[in-house]
Amino acid sequence: MGAVATDVTTDAVRAGLRGRGRDVRGAVFAGLMLASLLASLAILVVLLWDVAKVGVPVLADRGTSFFTDTNSTVPSRAGIGQALVGSMVLMVIVAVVAFPIGIGAAVYLEEYARDTWLTRFITANIRNLAGVPSIVYGILGLVIFVEALSKIVTMWPTGSLLSGGLTLAVLVLPIVIITSSEALRAVPRGIREAAYGVGATRWEVIRSHVLPSAIPGIVTGTVVSLARAFGETAPLLLVGAAQGFINTGSGSPLHKLLNAPYTAMPRIILDWMTRPQKAFTELAAAAIVVMMVILLVVNGFAIWLRNRYERKW
Image (tube, rainbow, N blue to C red; front, side):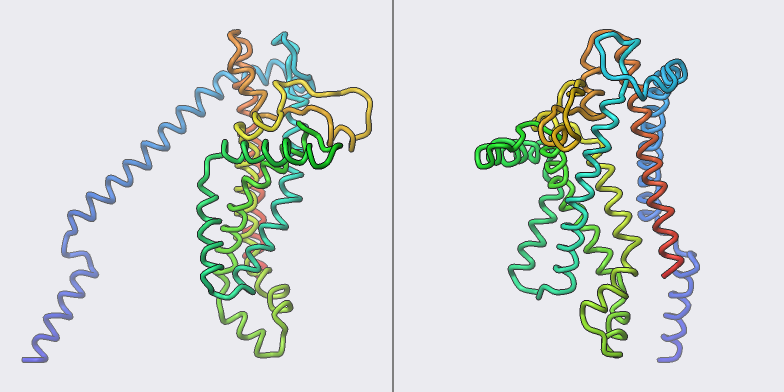
């Protein structure tokens, strides 16, 4: 009887694995998920087509002048030159500040910190901060990087690229920490144990084995966070981004970095969209197309870099 029962169970398992038993609920759920995906893609395609239909003719008509001209009250002379430079400088500040701090914090939490209530509390708060609305970080930047520091340091700028860049760096810092921690956690434990087995120190293990193996995930996370900072508008509104005009007068680059008013791509797009003239709406669509292309190029570079390191390691 035992052998017969075993044969029946084996046949039932084999039939289930071969799909002879139909999972109606699972099929319905999969169909709903596929429909959600197709609906999301359809909405995205419609939005992209609508923007491209308006913006591409503007780019074709204006040519390179659209990228070099400064903002103007005359649509035919308005361009994104100042905003593009401002966004690039902001991204440099974000990368210089957020990436080393975020990756260093992730390395400490995953490789050095013990599993205590304090470590778990810090990790939970970092994950919560990643979901905080960006306007909250704008208020934080206004209070700390604009108001408080200007009272403590008399020469601190009240509305500059440095204040905006630091605010955006704080905004993406939790994302950098989380993605870097996940990448470090995904490194097989055997790599660490093998390195310890041949006498390597903890720092040597992290530097020569753990970090190189985690680089693909870290690069992906940092580029995603940089893309988010590139498109943020709300924090910049609170920390002094102008409506499209920046100081182009005399002064050293350091002086302009610390004291000159600035603008950025999201800020100038918002300014053009709020104007009643149709020509400015078309300029905003063209600027959105430029932002999309930049983000696609940056993300494509991140994918290429990730694949390269995955093949290497």
